[in-house]
Length: 151
Image (cartoon, rainbow, N blue to C red):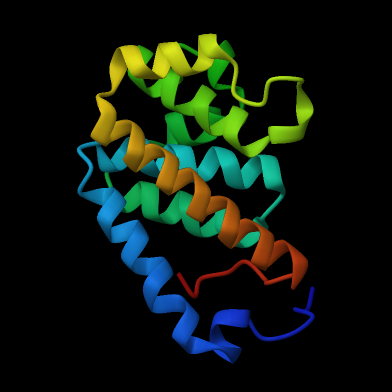
C-alpha cells in the first residue's frame, strides 16, 4: 500500500500543533488515559483507519492496556473485559462516530449512560477526543496513510 500523498499535516505543518493542543487539553479532563485510548481505537476501527488502529493499539499498550482487551475492543458489548464506565465511553464514541446511522445521532440513552459515569469536564474531554480521532481518521483514510512502526 502506498499513500496518495504526504500526510496533510506534513504539507501544512502549522495545522498539527493546534490539533495536538486539543488532545493535550482533553487528556487533562479527568478521563483515564486507557479509556481515551480505547475510545480512539474503537472510533478508528469503525472508520477503517489502519494507521490509527495500528498506532492506537500501540499507544494503548504503552498506557498499560492488555492484549486481551485490545483484541476485544471491536466486540466490547459481547465481552466481559470492560467496566461500565468504559462501555459508556465506547458507546458514546460509536454514536458520535456514526452520526448518520440513526435518526438521532447520539441517542439520549447513550448520552445518559455516559453522563452517569462522567462529569461535565470528563464528557467534554471524551467529546473532544472522539472529535479529534475522527478528524485524524478522515485525513488518514482519505490520503491512504500507511500503518506501521512510525508510531
